[in-house]
Structure formats: structure tokens, C-alpha cells
Length: 173
Length: 200
Image (cartoon, rainbow over all chains, first blue to last red):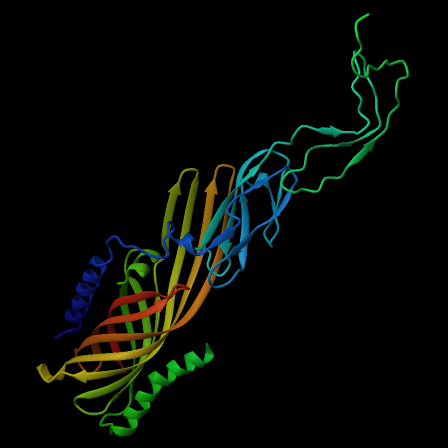
């Protein structure tokens, strides 16, 4: 038998091997099923503009995580997974990929709320009729959301002595 | 981990050493090279790697003790074509590109079959397989995209079964099934290869 015949058999075998390449399969490393082993806690978040929030991601084999947010304009993420929302309300998605094998991916939706209207509270506020009044009080720029710490600012003013106040019921004359 | 690898080495090399001690070599030690083509035959490896035939390359040393028995030590390098997986869900497009390769060191026993001039052999072997998977994952959605890359390696034990036809003193054709595991989820990884061996 000649070498050329040997190579012919080798080629035929290679052809048979090639024909065995096809076929549909299932896999743990598929795109659609690779996510089940990686998790982000919590599973969703709602934040006020400018508010920061710490996410945590884990796999059964370690916690080294690469973070990203889309759209990128929605906020910033530190390498440790701390997300700070930008000033624009809307929704975004925070992604975590496992640094050891980036085929493992997890994501969470994040909602950034619009800023709430200003709230003013003052124990000195007195209701008057038909006139404008100025009182000393404490105002805050917006209400707290989700346990956010809000810095209070103090506003000062003067009372207008010409304002007549009405207290209680006045019987008709 | 190191202890496990050492134990696997022991399981592979001790039978070879014992065989050399017990048997008396009738022919001198021979060396050679092998070249072949492989396809993945396990589901996960088929999905992770690209389509087509994958090249294998290696070297071996062989002790033929008599007309029936032989032992062989071999090193093989195997590279798989790059695999691409794409997933589209509403508003999100994801692509994963994966390049898999492995290096293996193993010992094998060959039994020559008593017909056709003892040209045919059947054999089995134990191997240490170093798997490496390099991946790039890219996610795209309205407003942007990002991509990260990673490379991971694992050392796993492997087993082989093969049949070969010895063409002449220098040339041999081999069909080999190699079974191992890889990945963080330890998925089965089997390959079927057709190799041409040259003995110097």
C-alpha cells in the first residue's frame, strides 16, 4: 500500500469527522442559560437622582465582578458595584460579569425617579386671609426617598405687621 | 489542587513505570510525531466551539515490549475553532465569543490484534488535560454597549480509547475518543480525532 492511499483514507476519515459536527444541542455555557449561576442582590432598585446604591454579585465560585450600566449616561458604577444615579429620570440596566469567566452574566433593572416637588414645613406657619406672609422656617429641597439623608437648610424672613389675622369664629354683627 | 494533580500524575505514570519493569522490551524505544483533526463529540463542547475540524499536534514515545503489547507516552496540543453564540431578547443583544484549547500529557497501553499481520491495535490511556477557555462577552442595547474578556484554565483527568492501523514501520493511522471535563461547571468534554502518527 502506498502513502498516497494512506493519505486518501486519512482525508476520507476527516470528511466523516466533519460531517459529525452538526446537530442541535443543549449546554450550560449557552448565552441564554449562562446567567443562572450568577446573581445580583437586590434584584431591582429604585433611586432618586444623585442617589448611590451598593449592589452585590456572586457566583458559586467567587465574587470577582466586572460592572457596567446601560445606557452609560444613566449613572456611574465603581469597581466595587456602587451605583450613583445621574440626574435624568428613567430606567437603566446594571450588568455584572464574572471576572474569571465573562460568559456568566447577571443584570438588574434600575429605575431613576423624577425629583419630587419641594416640601416646606414650619411650626410657625399661620394661615391668613388674603395676604402674603413671610415666616421663619425650615425648608428642604425635596423629600427623602428610600431612606436618603437630606440636608436641611434654614430660611429666614420678616413678618409683615400690617397683616390682620383671623383666629377662630367671628359671629356676624 | 496540587495534591490532586500529583495524584493524577501518579495514576498515569505508575502503570507505565510498572509495565516497563515487568515487561522486557524487545524493540528499542521509538519516538514520533502525530498530526490530526478532531471534532467535539460532547454537547457543551460543540456549542462552545466553532464549527469545522480542529487541528491536533503532538509527540510520543513508544516501548513495544513484544508482538502483542506496547506502552506509549504522548503529549498532544489541540486548538478548537472560535465559537460565537448570539442571543437576542427585547432590547438586548448579547454575543459571546469563545476560544477553547487544551494540552494533554498521557500514558497509553496498546494491544495488537492477532490478524492481518498484527497491524491493528486497540488501546486505552489516562491523561492529564489542561483546558483553557478565552471568552469575550459583549452586550448591546439602546444607549450603548460594553464588552469584557476573560481567560480561565483547569487541569482535569482524561481517558482515551483508540484503535489504530499500522501501515508500515513508520506510519500509523489512529481513531481516538478522548473524554475529559472542563469549565467551572465541570461539563463533559469529549473529542473524536483522526490522527496520523510518524515513528522515527
